[in-house]
Length: 153
Image (tube, rainbow, N blue to C red):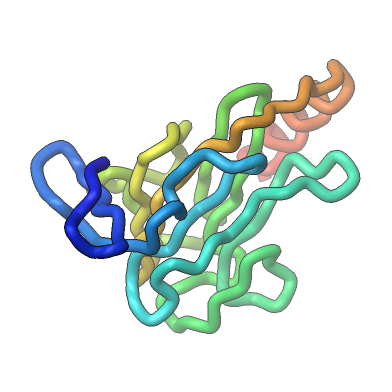
């Protein structure tokens, strides 16, 4: 990541500049988040702030998603974002056509800070949070079982 002469931070992949977003959006904050890089939502932050021990968030076009974007290229709950310990797992709904992480087509991926996701016509970058709360053994166990059940169904 490098600064430009303007007030933007340029997000770099391994070979070239991808998009510009507001300065400070890619700096670590209290909670992990996605920053949207594509217009018309460029600069919007999707903060993964847990509510009552929440470990899973949904991104899609449906009203039930945690992060809703009205867009025909998205399934109502297109992405499932899960925190498992210190890792972040992103997977697509079983009825979806997948997504891209750093230009690689995937259906499930563990992501790190700085990874770029392309979902439908939207491009996002993941920014890890500074604070990671310890998960209880019960939370980790229930997350594992729910992932197993979700994949099996």
